[in-house]
Image 1 (spheres, rainbow, N blue to C red):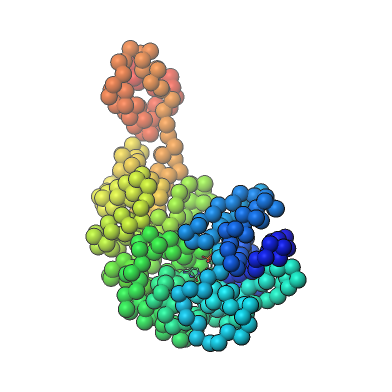
Image 2 (image 1 turned 30 degrees about the vertical axis):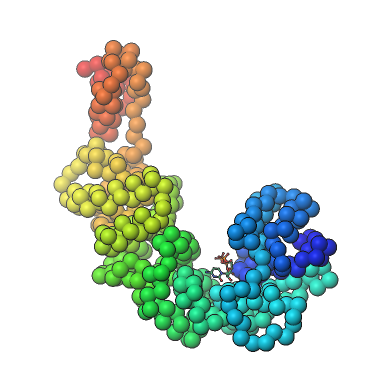
Length: 401
Ligand code: CTP
């Protein structure tokens, strides 16, 4: 349909990038990227009238996203040929623009495409031997300065390498190491770096990539010299295992990436940690939650590692202000089975204990609203946690006494 419309309206449209790569690999990828010569936005605006859906346009970038009724998304981008001089003479004039556009991309395996226009529908585009690299499992850049122009590609390379079990080609690895050693990663804004790390750690093979990033010195460049790399790796693996346990037990985790990030940042110097957290522009409640973790986790661990007996209400006092997303890294950092048992007792049982007495019950009992209300509720909960009361009747008797 897209091809027919493009042909009718005088545009050239191509399916390109990750969608085509994964199609050839037989891997599911529902994110379809279409490149349009000469104007993706005006084409998408015409298309939406034809096939329906919800269109969002980004004029500054010459892109548009069409969300179809079934929820699937199609991204449209205008083929661009500015910025990068292309060295070789261009044999087919009609394909100049798309060829330039593909040349600007990260790796040869991402430069494959299909023509969509109706008479030539399905014609395969492979200007840079991407299909061969895909078959051989090779990640290769298209030009020497690729990592310098966009250092986030360093992380993309190791992400794809682990995801598909591919190998970064020798020369490409040398360009990459060169960019790392020349501090190119420091040029990337924290927000973009965090996005890229999040993508990496969201993959099934995220920890393999993380280890590779560590071995290549990437993590040191992003977060400052990590002193005990083996310990960090071990803690990351523990986080991964603990999150799997949480999933099985139905314990909710809000943002797995931030769970990993807490562990990484606990190995950093404070000024780097603050700079990273500020640079991520997190929502205030998330930022505060992370800051609370860094302020409090060491003190909490000291108590939790102490083999002395804690009553349930004492455990809740130590753990109750930490979010689930903070308790997982706290457990991983502790490396202690005792801490793990205590945290999971809290997550699975103690955090769910609540009282039935409400404000109106206290009013009925003749209390005047004020700080006394929360004081009573807090003490009631302690009594309930420690097994001294078990139902509303007993709660009311306790309040009266
Ligand atoms: N791209 C690039 N440089 C980047 C990011 C993206 O050249 N730093 C190009 C790649 O060629 C990629 C395309 O833009 O194919 C679309 O980017 P994205 O959707 O992020 O990548 P996918 O390859 O689809 O990756 P994924 O499978 O992880 O979604």
